Image 1 (cartoon, rainbow, N blue to C red):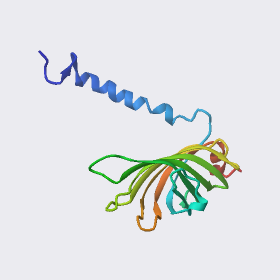
Image 2: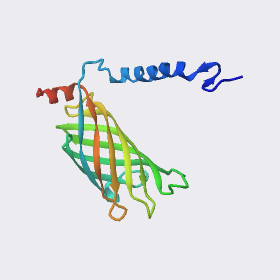
Image 3: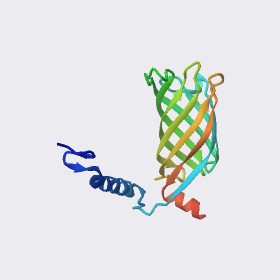
Image 4: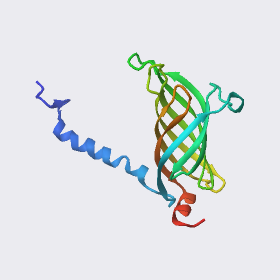
Length: 182
C-alpha cells in the first residue's frame, strides 16, 4: 500500500531537494565564461518594414529590413526560410517561422538563426515573439555569439513590425568594445 506523497517507494520530500539542486547546478556551465571572452547585455527597440519581392530572396516570400535602437544601434534584415501553422484550434492564426537575421551594428555584422511565432489571424493581434541565436560575426565582430529575444507586434495592414529586444553578446570583440579597446 502506498502512502500519500510516495511513488516507487520514494517520498517527494526526499527527492525534491535533489531535483532542485540538479536544476540549480545544470545551468551553471552555460553561464561560465571558459574562453575569457566577455559577454555584454543589450536591449532596445526595433522597427522593420517588408521588403518588395524584387529585394526578397525568401522561399516563402517574406523579408523585412529595419532599425535597432539602444544597445545595438544599427540596422537589420530578416529573410524568412519557413512558415507553418501551429495547427492549434484555440489560436487559429498562430504561425511558427524560421529564418536568418543579419544585424549591422557596433561597427560590424552579426548573423543569426531567427525562430519565432506570430499571430496572423485576420482577427488576431499580430503579436510576435522570437529568439535569434547569434552564430557569428564579421568586420571586427568575428567570434561573436549570443542571443536576442524579440517581443513585438506586426501590423496586419502595413506589414510593419515593432517591439523590444533584449539579449547578450559574447566574444573578444564585445569585451574590447565594452572596455573601450578596439
